[in-house]
Figure 1 (cartoon, rainbow, N blue to C red):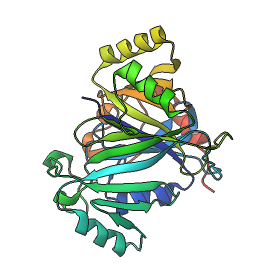
Figure 2 (cartoon, rainbow, N blue to C red; figure 1 turned 135 degrees about the horizontal axis):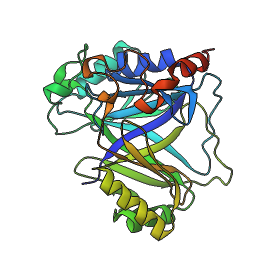
Figure 3 (cartoon, rainbow, N blue to C red; figure 1 turned 90 degrees about the vertical axis):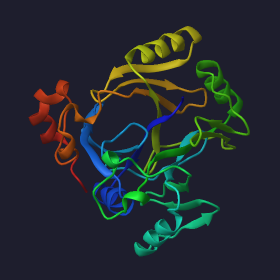
Figure 4 (spheres, rainbow, N blue to C red; figure 1 turned 180 degrees about the horizontal axis):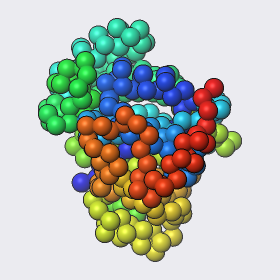
Length: 295
């Protein structure tokens, strides 16, 4: 059954970002690493205790990052799902941190420090399993379960919908691809004819889960055969990834469920120090010496 793997965005302020996603939203800082395409750039991962696929939100840290301009195509919104009977708790928590929000039925809408829209949606799901619960001040039965939704904004929604239908067999109904019982992707039209410009809070890509290497290779071969715009097939250490540009210009990733974040550090120590997958380990001294300085 289709499911999200993670969503990756850009931010300028690492301390502000960590505070918001760990101290306010109660996610675990599961990986402190670098952008494997630019080793000077830190890459932070947040998720449940294990950093399970589907629970993960990541940020590339770029201290010089400017304003974002969302025009012709862009990815927006981090939708996160909550367990049953948790709406009141999260409204109280946001009040505690003086975060403005609005409520719509079982949804709470607000913004992170980079003006990324966050939507918390109460579901009928049970709380996280005990071994996925984060040890913090968010009660175990109120903790965020994982990703719930996101949005692709494109100039030609029909072309983007056709990509998902032809490549993956995922149908779009009323601008929405229902991935599973709870999670969905929206495909929305844009009116602007100017290109978008990445900046603070821009989403670099949205990633969907693939069961294993074999399934990922099959997707790669299918994409080649159907003529989609493949960017790369690459091992990230923690998972293997296939990157494709959908017809609207947004980057879509397909990522395997394993090996996971314990590849280079033990579960109980995740996120506590700069982690590098094995193929980057020998470059540690050089990488650490050249990380973008904070401003």
